[in-house]
Image (tube, rainbow over the protein chains, first blue to last red):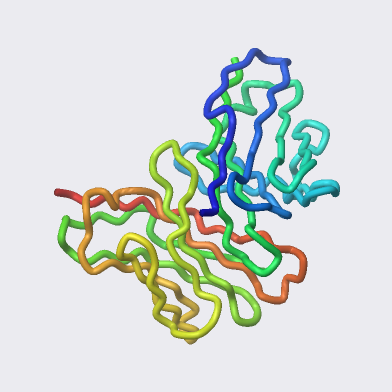
Length: 116
Length: 116
């Protein structure tokens, strides 16, 4: 149980285009999802906390208008990187909480974004 | 401020030997502590957590961790390492009085290399 999927697993796009990454909880309802960014051989950087039906809470320094997060249902959150630039190239990972009384985050497999 | 420290960037151990990956934390109150493992180009997998109760916590793949309140540590251990344990290990903490803020504070990760 507690399986989280991400799509796509990798994407290459041209500078200036937008890319949408989906995060789905497959066998549970996730009221809260998190979006992380990870640079090579580095730790996780939390970008935002996404709660179903409400606006995402962004971490300091993360551009809300560039990284659009939508959590429209209890099983789906999306991250859209708008007007992508090469510096946005990174590994993006989502995670989900299985309920209000748990603190264990279950992670998706990640999405490798390369912006040319 | 809340923080997590993983003092070793890399740990090398021979297959069959015991392994320890260190983690210390700084958080007010009784912490929630977690260990996750990340294999190359993959998302994170949950290994174990400490919330309350027995200080020795057993988790997946034969791993265990011991909560030491006086030393504010939560070291990950395994009695006999396998080559397949080679991966990146992350320690994380959450303050119990964080209310609706359920995000985790992450260590920088420790790369474990198990040599045949």
